[in-house]
Length: 401
Image (cartoon, rainbow, N blue to C red; front, side, top):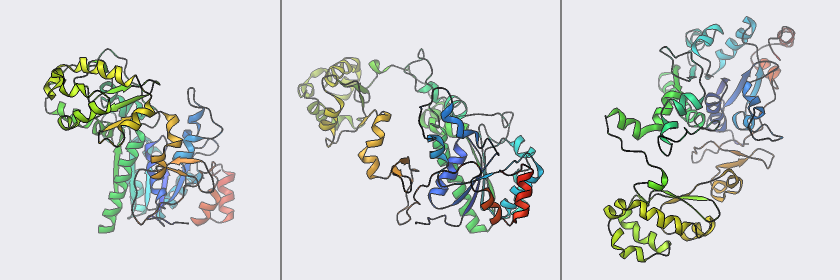
């Protein structure tokens, strides 16, 4: 079995919902030994996500499969002093400690950076929050739906116009991009440790990542830019940067930024070479000035063929376009399979979503199924130096399960 770049790296995942533990999952993909610390009996509340109203029904806990692969579980009651003592012993031997508890909770459970750093000078302490570590909202709970998607303006910006209902996010839509940023922070701290020999405190939050994702438009607002009217698809200002519905109800999106060069190719692909010489659309300014008219023409053309037919016509044309994918497409997406975007669990045919980075010459470890609650508690405690009598005592006291 491949060991991975981070073979031997010990990571404590003391987090839930979703960005922080997902960052630990990426570390595990590259061989880190990740210990999932979760409450006894109930376990990490995230295990229950698929049971909430509205989520897809499956015999598999798909949320846990994705976020907890490769990890070992220690069921530990951190509300008890004995549980905190176990955590401190683990921290003394760990390389990375990951948490998304709010600052006030960390203080109550004895796991602030100030408390843990003296136990291990090389510790990378990584904390993730909804709204940052400082200010009036530092302890405010938040999910990506509100702290990332709504607070950043993204929920508003993707609306077709100001009168459209704000677009809801899907579970993990902001958390997973945030996980990659958080992973980057952790790896940066590990690199710093290689140079200095000392650990440090790194952090990230949903709000900051949301504004980073809002990117160009957020910066435009910071520059005092003047924004124009937000227009629905049918009234877009540029017909060749727009999405269109095919005969079978599927959608595709055109993204022809090099419009002057690509306009003739598009007209030929659409079977409308007459548009090239059409005086109404002869130049880019002409096409933009008559975008509503051109959109109506394109709507009629794209409605004449199914998506698969349009893909056959447009693929290889040099035109930039994309399929508006649906979930049904993913399991059989050949490009995703060929590029290991989807990979099977070890010893299984079930696929999982791979973390989106690769390093040549350093394969990831095959994803292993996630643990049951406390599945590895005794094993982890033995490795940390507890003998059988001490383990029984912790179990009898309800500290470990």
